[in-house]
Image (cartoon, rainbow, N blue to C red):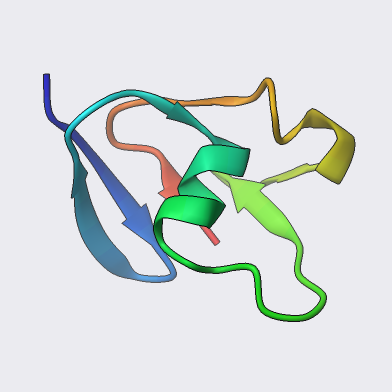
Length: 60
């Protein structure tokens, strides 16, 4: 199953489901301090390991 997500305005195809934590690692986004929003909602860092990314999510 391929998931399509938009990250910082760029569309990405993911070959498997993942969490916010895995997405940040896969796309090498963790440089310095950062915050993550999924569909305009802030995801606290403590929730990154359990927050699942869904098809067509928008991540900023």
